[in-house]
Length: 112
Length: 114
Image (tube, rainbow over all chains, first blue to last red; front, side):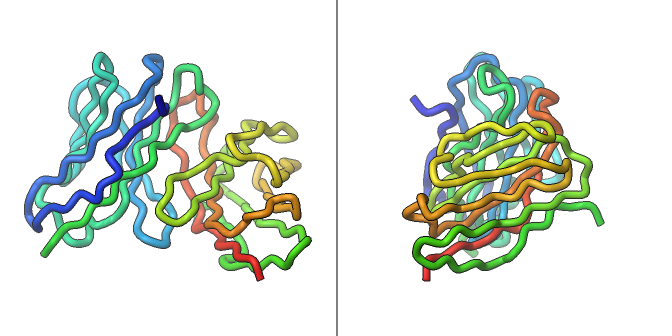
């Protein structure tokens, strides 16, 4: 089992819809969770982080964490074509306490 | 402005040649990381360093070497032993991972074989 898993996609949503991106992790001791956005040919940029169970909202983005289920998600409301990118889930803590573990990423395409 | 600078943006390697990718940060971060990304793939960790004069191998260290003589700098050498070096190389820095802080990335270096 991979340490951090994501649906590879591509995930296609119409403009204005909610995009839901999911991530599961295997190390129950993981403590911190990050979402990065990577446009084609560019480097990843941090868009959200969450440490506690529940929801965290920042503009059109909401991160959701459920440590009991070892599940973290990213919701993008009112999706725009500019949201089309690959979204990387990243995890810190547990046995990999000294490095960040990245998932393989989910490709999102927002259709105008 | 504070940030992470990678150079060059594009690099070409000849057969049997070693090449060095530069990564400099002025964010006062203790930890620095090198990743490799192949087209359509995720990030793979090459080497990382939590403190000056110390570094650890990541998942794909073979054919690569690093040094960490200064806090601000973490150069990566792609040696001739790396037979398939063509990829997008990303440098990142952050607080030590034990502090649960995110990493931030440079703009990357694209390496190709001539």
